[in-house]
Image: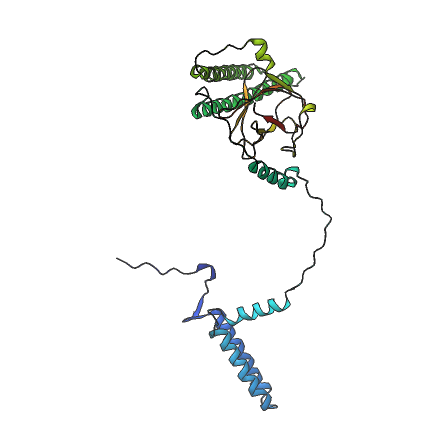
Length: 336
């Protein structure tokens, strides 16, 4: 077996000139010897007492810089470090540059958020005992979230397809020097749009199947809720009547956000908030963080939306929200 080559530091590689002497060592040695030679030629005949000490010092310094490292580092490194330490400033003065920085309300209120969570944790009361197994399982919640994401992606594709179709219609109505036939392109876009609509309908049916399968697990003697009472459970929320919390969670318009707590005021982590459009299709599926906060990442189009919440054995009101292009302050949603 052949031995492996010894690793070398290729970043500080130096070419060797004669034997083990590098080019830098040769230059230091030649410089010291050259200065000593010139002093010997020009100064020693006139001032021998001054010339010979200078000759010895010059030759010694050249040899020291070339062959005498200290702590595995050459003398030129220590000389550079010494000069840098001498001339580097040791006192600094702060000056205001009058630069305007972005004022982030969420960052400015971080202390209030932290202290409020500590106060609620110190006053925490034991939660009531859970009800029988009429609640959705973790797998069902995960399936609901996946279906909601699929519906959201399909809705975005439908909107993009409709926008492309409108652009083609506007181009066809404009006068052009050379007429262009858009019939094949329009037919293809319409076929894609029909396919997306059918896929969205299938996802909606699957979502209805998942949500309707949950009451089958409830205890017997389930009382049917009249349609009038069911209508009263939906709470209409407008942007002007939303209760303002301690901080803003977003600065973008038409982004639904809020804070979820239980009936004792404790923040709820891991709650699933599903937002439905006016056609009943889920457009957003959000999850609350440790502070009970949830917020969307992209704005929604103007219109009416319905917000439902799911978390363990807790029940929440179904909120109906009207979006009109304004920045929504956080919703404060409390369990019943």
